[in-house]
Image (tube, rainbow, N blue to C red; front, side, top):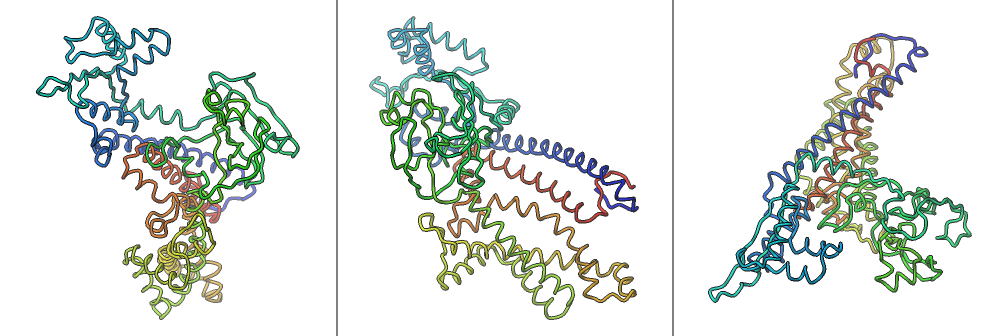
Length: 543
């Protein structure tokens, strides 16, 4: 981007400028995606290559209770859960052979019995150990045998049973490829392996969830992961979909088994129960969200309750709750605090610039210095103490949600933003006041008010305007210190919590989310700045 030096005809340049802007946005977005990929690769190298894997067990109660060979097996199993490596136990492998029908139960039960040493293995055991070793060695695994740990009496010590397993580190390129190939999941009718009825899609104008009486169009799948792919309901934004899902990475400890994206966007709080008519016709007061029904193979066979409610294996439903999601809480606080900051800071900065070196400017400067130099915790606790004395809520309560809960966090978040905007806008305005065009405007007889309103403020605000998209988008990520102080169930603490618990998938997912927001905010900032200031062009050379 650069400033235009000439003044070509607007009518002849509009289409060309839009085409150039589109190319610029696409090019920036591609470069941004490359940068994001590099960032994720670096994060993966740091997590999976340089961090000490054994730190996972520093506060693991199970790890302290097991010993000897059992502890080693537990370590490798957990490392697999956290994505460090691939792991296969010989005993599990034998169970899979039996389950697939390649061996019978009698063969399995005898072949899994290991001697205290390899020399004491039976011929049948040696045969299958050899097959296990050959199969996994071809796949690039390292096969390891743990000999029995015995006591002085010759008996096997607790947890010292012999074991055989295979493990393999995951190469970085393979890890990156797998992660990004699963980033966007598009549901399809081949997801379910064994599905009742014909695979396909059905369009209906009368959603069965509402008894088939209410006009509510929906697209229903059979063989898909989710039963409802597209549907209408009474919740904003009214049209919802399960067809395309973003997968940031599945959590192992923070929200076990749930993807990071789902953890951010799923509602929280207490259950909202209503009279539900299940597919079998059973009516029951429940918080189940029937539009979230997902496929679980054979689920009805294992549960009488599910069999009484459902006619197929789309039985895994989420629940309706009465409060915002983590991202929702963070965004509301972030966007309202940003609006408050601009409403206060912009007039204050204008006043400081116009009254340079006078009382108003000195008072504003004192505020800027104080808010920048004082640690965030200090003024957050001060605001909380004053607010608490005035009777305002000082902590979020999901069970008894009130609008007053937002007041103190919004003020706490706005305070540093006010100082930052005041500082830069004042500086930009004073810089503009020294420009030749201001002197020329004065000589033309324009009043100081007109000069500030029509020229100085407009030009000085351009760099501030560029940051507005970032302010809006980064409201989604929350604020760590503020959310901790006011017990806000937002997204601000997710990364810190993931780091503390070594939840690697969450760390990678949150970093990816932050990186994508940065790229999008940067592009939107450039586009907005060029829209506001016609002197700025997306071309790479002067016109």
